Length: 506
Image 1 (cartoon, helix red, strand yellow):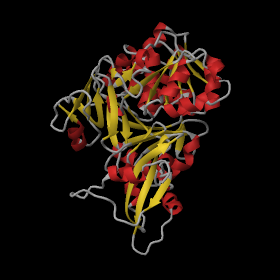
Image 2 (spheres, one colour):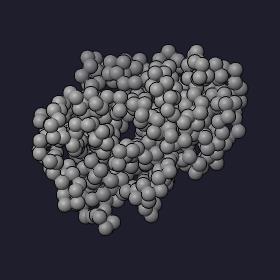
Image 3 (cartoon, one colour):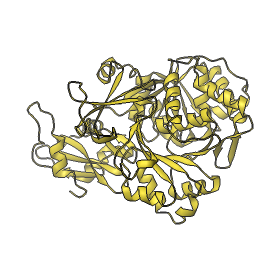
Image 4 (cartoon, helix red, strand yellow):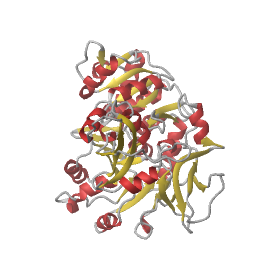
């Protein structure tokens, strides 16, 4: 049986004294990391957590997050990884939809959880650090006296391991159900495609609530690498960590790479790095060339939560020649580009990207309609538009669902538009992405006031505060006095809006 928690137990058996996890001054061998994961598992089992229970995780990157991941996997529980940037109403909806019975959070989010708790259906709360509060026990306190022996495996294979919520096109996110087998095959296909070596020192700075970072943690254990974990991204601190820990490789987005490049001492700090993986948006050629001058290859990747991470990647050999492409399929992955009738299109013709593989999810949580639309005959219909060149290299042309990618975070306009529709002075609203030097893209709202309403951009932005995660809040607002352009069926023509208002300055 494939159980992702057992990956850690096996690695601890094979290399108990190898450094497995580094987090600032905290250094844990694989043996120590596994024993801590077991203590967490026993502590939560003592609170009644069992196979199939959904446990919410609201933590920034930390050793506790890693221990919860592997420990809960051993129990057969399902982790609902929560984006800590979300507002309480967003967290409330996800917890209710997933049926979260227990929420583990860290003290930094105490105020948000208190706001959530007043309306949430979550039965129990556990604070990750000391001390506890009246309504939340301390995980540190529970784990210190718990057994460190292996708990019995509660599940595996096609049992759910994760429910990761992706932004929804209808204003509500969808829960991608990721199984133990999905994670296993996601790890295998990446390890067979990319140059991960035993005992590599792998930096993880992307948030662990994202599938990419959690993939990297899994792969470190699977391959026998050392995970160097950072709480969050900060350019100077990241460069110092790369220098001090002699990092071999890491995962990033283009905005992070540019920020690192601008820090004094960059060249010396990255001397140990062989290569890195970059996703979310194309890497500009000058940035690829800048890293290449320091003998670092940037491998551009394309993937989704629904593929448990990997789909396509551009290898180092042709990174410059094929810049802008996302390369070819990962090892155990198939990719097609099809027209609206489901027929494969010829080279250079744009169509929808379909992905198939054992790492592709089978369903969205409690969403049979969404599942039926997205997964047909084993193929995931991504909603992304792309084309192949004559050599089979994939290039993403556009987001069929109008998704905005801002600093590696996905923003679906419908979710923002749903909030804007609640403003008493707004008659209609549309959200598009505009170029942003720092984040790649940023959301812009085009709003039409109701008759007699005097709207300002500042007022629109303020209305979104507390209702949306900060990164989803429009960074610019256009007050438009004409009706928004629509097609004969009433759908807003985003293409027209992008042509008119999609420039950097508008």
